[in-house]
Amino acid sequence: MDQTQTSTDEDFSSGCRSSSCNITDEGCDALTSVLTSNPSYLTEIILDENLIGDSGVKLISDILKNPDCKLKILKLCFCNITDEGCAALTSALTSNPSHLRELNLTGNTIGDSGVKLISDVLKNPDCKLKILELCECNITDEGCVALSSALTSNPSHLRELNLSVNDVENSGVKLISDVLKNPDCKLEILDMRMCNITAEGCVALSSALRSNSSHLRELHLSANTFGDSGVKRICDGLKNPDCKLEKLKLWKCNITAEGCAALSSAVRSNPSHLRELNLSFNNVVNSGVKLISDVLKNPDCKLEILDLCECNVTTEGCAALSSALTSNPSHLRDL
Image (cartoon, rainbow, N blue to C red; front, side, top):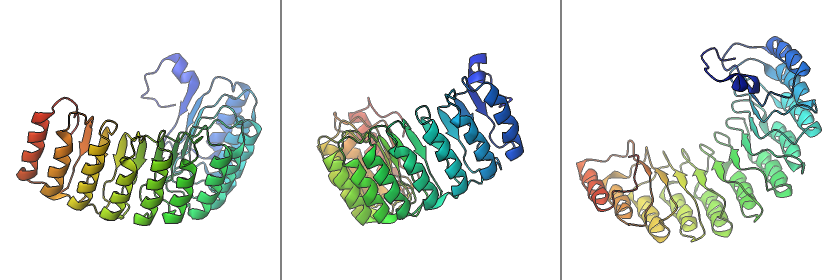
């Protein structure tokens, strides 16, 4: 338990937070022993950055198998877990699938074989998982095949999917995009930062936004080098009057003023939904900022957060921003 935490007794009984505590499988053995005797109160376990490995996960999985277990959140980031640990987890969740709402396995080398095991759980109609974090897990498009198959079988529960820092590439993006087209898909947050996506992958995402854009609220595509051509494809989706996207993060995507022109055109066509736009670490320069500023002048624009960190903007670009905010000062909260 975090010694600095100042929660109520109820919070202490419902959560176990032991991040970066040098815990090994031996500590998991003690933890599971205690929780086996009283499993019904604990709803959250956070063991990030501990060396528990697969043997520790197997012990945690024994808790999940208990029919009295009501665990809703399980975070095991950077815990040296492989597909062997995933096998234990998925076996437990198959036995007792209805309570867990969030699973975070970021920074574990589970690979495609581990994702396939997790996907089998997602196919279960009793699975109610809403948040699945698989950042930096050595996943390729092969893993995306399994995920897309699972989400096609059971599309209505998952709300957030994080596949960032994996080598899924365009083929993986296309598979996930096909899931988004399913009218029963309720995915609201998709994070695919640093996934080697090019403009080709953006075409698939744009097609998904046009066909079934009513649910997706956040799209994170930062650190993919698709450039202006990719942004233009995304903008085709943003122009859809049914698109409800609220957050678009495109930092470090090789975007220039040309991409800003496409963005400004798209937001002018559909200005009322976008709340956050991140263009940091792109060479948008003053001409790009002027185009974004023209959007801000629109009284229907509801943008609240605009991030232009390290975009080669000078006082000339600031003059355009200042003019826009003078014309329409009521919405932007963070610049």
